[in-house]
Image (spheres, helix red, strand yellow):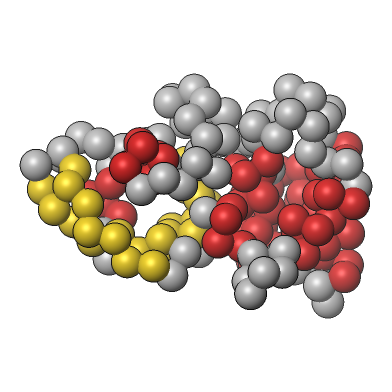
Amino acid sequence: MLNIELKVNGMKFNVDVTPYDTLAKILREKLGFTDVKNGCENGECGSCTVLVDGKAVVSCLMLAVKAEGKEITTARGLAKDGKLHILQEKFIAHDAIQCGYCTPGMLMSAKALLDTNPNPSEEEIRIGISGNICRCTGYQQIVEAIAAAATENK
């Protein structure tokens, strides 16, 4: 076992991990960040997407030890001072949430997109979330929510 320090949503955690534990497993099972979903464990569904130093990462493919010293943000960390992030608000307003399983990862991919491209086209939004699978919404409401967040965030 190794003891590492992880900084998640602005909080520091010391946690014991094995060299082969994934970041997704540690965030969810040891630290209680249940907003990090564990879908495919192959990096294909995007439900475990978090931001690591501001970049969208499928956490089921990242070893926890590689995240030490980096800033990790989960969907829970988007809200500040009891106020939802604009993306969270727009996902609700545009009915972009159905079963909710993909939502945290989708939000994190959208956040990474808007951080690098604050005015994306519909095509750029679709490309930005292409690593996230949603089986419920058909994506249109999600794309509309992200576009609305971009428009309002100007």
